[in-house]
Amino acid sequence: MNYKSIAQETLDIEARTLLDAKEYVGEEFKEAVEMILPCKGKLIVTGVGKSGLIGAKIAATLASTGTPSFFLHPTEALHGDLGMIGQEDIVLAISYSGESEELSSILPHIKRFDIPLIGMSKSVESTLGHYSDIHIPIIVEKEACPLNVAPTSSTTLTLALGDALAICLMRARDFKKDDFASLHPGGSLGKRLFVKVKDLMRTDHLPVIDRDATMKEAIVAMSEGRLGTVLLADKEGRLEALLSDGDVRRALLQSDFDLSHKAIEYATKDPLYVDDDEILASDALVLIENKKIQLLVITDKAKRIKGVLHLHTLIEKGIS
Image (cartoon, rainbow, N blue to C red; front, side, top):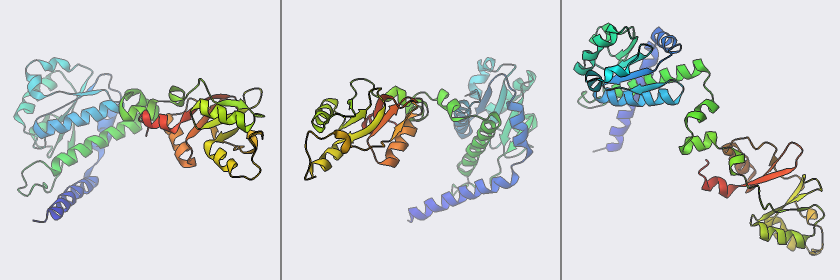
């Protein structure tokens, strides 16, 4: 059996489903966004079975991108959790058939309290469609399942439509990277979007020497600093040059090398530095990788040395 071919066929079917959806997405998205934007409560997502699983993911995406949202299972709602839906909330109900018994059972109660309802199903003529104030169609020509039974293309499309709704709301709110970071302080996303250079840079026991120091003094300071680098500064602490262990090795190969020579003669006179410790650590990593260096010097606006950030620190802290 050619499993590669089966996998490719599955992807083709689901990809066509998504592309076909572009042709019928219409005003309902504009109406849904305009209903949700002024909402003072939460967008409560509900659904059963596979639709429920997709709904839970949609709720999580909405909540992480600036739209307060949570998932409510219809069965739990029937047994007391309807009280979790407030007068200022909006409900997004998902059912491909639009006829799910558990979901249909709570729809009259939602409308009894005059809660705005956005429905997602294959037909506006379904039970869910009739109760919905706004209906977003889920039109699928064929499930990827060879029996055309298991929810595959339909769940993929539902998830994509949920993503599209979340992105519309993000754009409408001008939701920015800083907003995203404030909602993701932990994990790799939080580290990439929240951790700043000042949080990771080394500020004590810096290997800084006077610009007129000798190579002997520089090598001693480099050994004590344990960074493989020394920074050369003027009397006011302003960065003038950087001497790396590579610079030292190259100096040793010169026929006229002498430990009494000034270190600045062998140092990099215009080293890379940043004068803003508020920049993201992930942006600093990009600088380090692009310049193929291991140490980034951090200064103030007057170029006075404040700290250093090593590539190994960024890696250890999971910055990517």
